Length: 229
Image 1 (cartoon, one colour):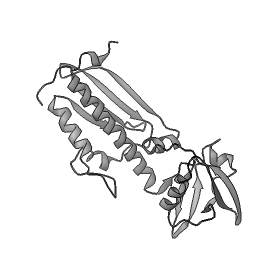
Image 2: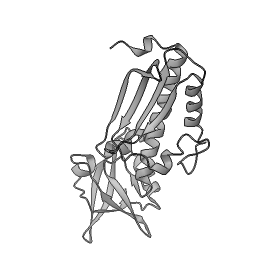
Image 3: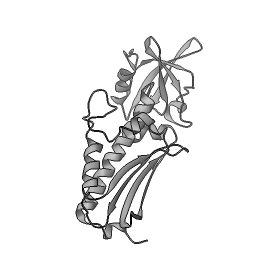
């Protein structure tokens, strides 16, 4: 198959790259939102579940087999009580504590069946939040490109698909609305709306689909020659 970018204008190529960058960020944020609403995902290759009314206690679950927490001897169902001898005030506080020692070890105080003990956990140095939720679920990202004719107009597309939990319908319906965001502390909610406007300005489209089999697929399509929307 011929390289579709050979037939796209430089402006169209820039739009594709810019749009897909925003899509990957949005995709990662959406999946992290889905996971972190009820639990904090740590970079210690396991999940922490909040224990109601006990901010200084986290339930450890979904430990990655062969991962650093597994190798330290921690098991699903154990409770995390302290990190490096210090209690944490919240799950976010605990996450920041292990981020601070990334590349080194953190001593976890663990409780199992009423008994407490300590283990040293090697904390990976690299943290990629955009893909963290997918990775810890055994997920993946797939990037595809190709030629596609839409409404009799030749063009090219780029699609990013993940194998995560997908995006809730009520969020998907508003994803391209101005000022809509799932973030609680920052973010303007304009990124995808602006991207959609730019793509449509040149006769293209940007969309998201969540197939029944799971995951999400973001697609940007642009005509070979720029056209009025």
